Image (cartoon, rainbow over all chains, first blue to last red; front, side, top):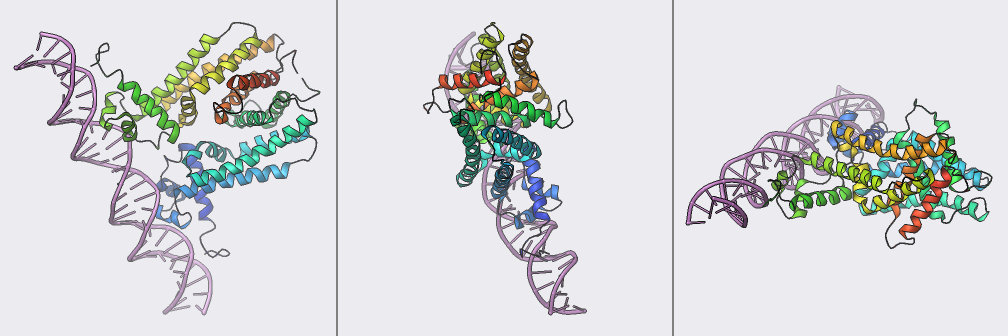
Length: 199
Length: 199
DNA sequence: TTTGTATCTGAACACGCGTTCATTTCAATC
DNA sequence: GATTGAAATGAACGCGTGTTCAGATACAAA
């Protein structure tokens, strides 16, 4: 069946990951059984082991894919403009990515503790790279006197936490359009970092 | 043994809740067994059922206690000053409470999905009361032209998310004192809401 | 000393877990 | 039509789960 890699269906594998993602997000890693995942895919539990060595690796693969996609998404959006423009791009990219990957986002914050130490360290390294990307923008802006921040590391955490919060309440078709939400959050961030020419 | 209520030890009950709190925070509700909790207390699993009807109720009691304490903490800190003072008090109270109840905070965000619908609704009602307290401050400030906010509901969520973020990285004895962190976050919040006389 | 009661044990119940593996299915290739 | 080999089954493994409960224990009151 497999045409290129020489092993495993190229259809069932992704379906398993999609089902696992949704179920882990909904009920939590520990509360979801391999039989439930298999049931969602329409297969027996044993078949899952043709695609993943174990449940732990399945979780890790989902988290790693999320972080890789996130970093990839930012590297494509990176405008290369001045710090203010870069910060706006970062905020919008972050909100957009998170809202279109809400299950992965949820898991990547909630299920870290279910990773064994090695896997945890790998995911943390990705996360650090992402945070560093934001901090670089804030540092550049602070040095150029465009922002007013006593501590860029702390501001980095504050901005990410604030933007992540959107996912806890935003629902498409609700009171505010996504673009409007992005604009309002960007204005709050812009003020929080003390961007000049804006009060 | 019980002297006042006529049932249950007044020592073992709290010890069970403390052990459950710590274990749930560390490993997650679904991943912790009643036997583990009992082991932590130095008792057999069956004994837990003298203090809680089941595992689900044990979780609910922890979450409810957290929300009650949180609301209580704010009602005691409420200064009754102008919106700017109230907002500062809210930010400081929130950070202080969360840092001194980090396990409860963690659980109360992570384990909501493990509550059955009735219990979930009750906790959400507490949470709404708390959010409303913050939104009332933001509304009052906006109407008094002290803040500049296009949407107080959205600002409420943004502020809470930002403040909650402190718990993900702050460690006592680290680079910054808690008071310094409170001050920096308060300044970011103050600017994010567009407080006058401050850029 | 006897009684009463709050506390706890330890075994048991039915069930679901992650994982393994010999066996079956079945489309593609020769 | 026979052969191949990946894909999937379904039963089995040992173990841990939440919960129950009859019985043991400890201790205050009578």
